Length: 211
Ligand code: GAR
Image 1: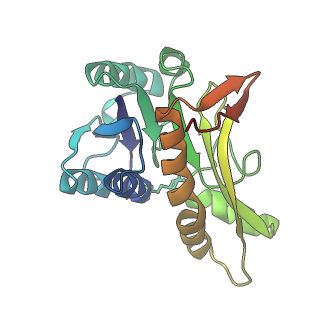
Image 2: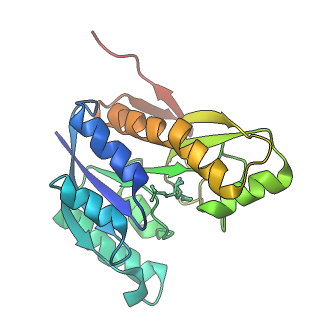
């Protein structure tokens, strides 16, 4: 059984999607063992507690930079014996040192079809603001493995979502979550835990399920 540690910073609807999938028995070979928040009081912590999942807080504001924060987080992750780390609305850029310690074992959900609207400064509502400003007619979400390039790691799953006339960043964010993020994040976690992700030359190939 793989130990899944979920990192959060905010409302935690993606965490909720993972908890719901786990409760439906859709995460095979893994279990969420701990949720770590970069913010005290994040609502995601309440969701975890309600599901009986242990929580820890490592507040980003108590550290001078991402390197010292990542160093402390690495200690937490080792204490938790994490096999898979899931960034579910986690708003801290991890230092390379941590990423190398967990190479190809960190999944992130991003609210656009990478390589559009991603990288430095593209997070949360800003992503949807940029998509609307550009006038794209289709957007979506991506789950990818984390490497040292911000939002640049191997893509695991993507799902497209239509932009509608009159959308605001908030309505678009909600539709992308409902129609894409909340589906592909649990699916990607399930595939990882079943060891069905084969990464070759920076490309993820999904291994067919054995019967
Ligand atoms: C989600 O839309 C997630 O994709 C995004 O933040 C939101 C968190 O919501 N993440 C990023 O922008 C990371 N670059 P949640 O806390 O309700 O899951």
